[in-house]
Length: 121
Image (cartoon, rainbow, N blue to C red):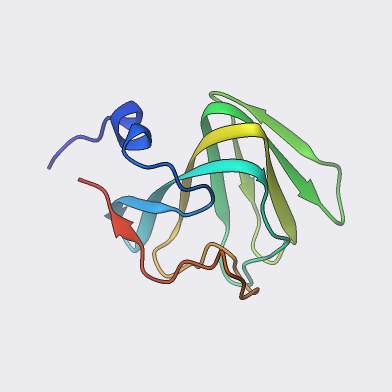
């Protein structure tokens, strides 16, 4: 039962769009990621995805809906099956909450796909 300092955790890595595993609970993962510019269009067929902006600004683009702009302290849940693209403007520290097995690029395989998350702390 160790606490996680979000400021210290975000300071411990620099790679954009490469999430780190902060903690797990009840089959869910709390992941931290740094955003820098555009990520890839993707969806998660069987998982909702919660975005919480710790610092910076994040725009979530949707093909079928208006974009959502998140400032520090804002959160948004993207429903399963919804195609979306996160865009950090210009950078953002993001907390993600989703099922543990959820890939960062969802249904898309790219150079940015992370399959083995580094654990923080």
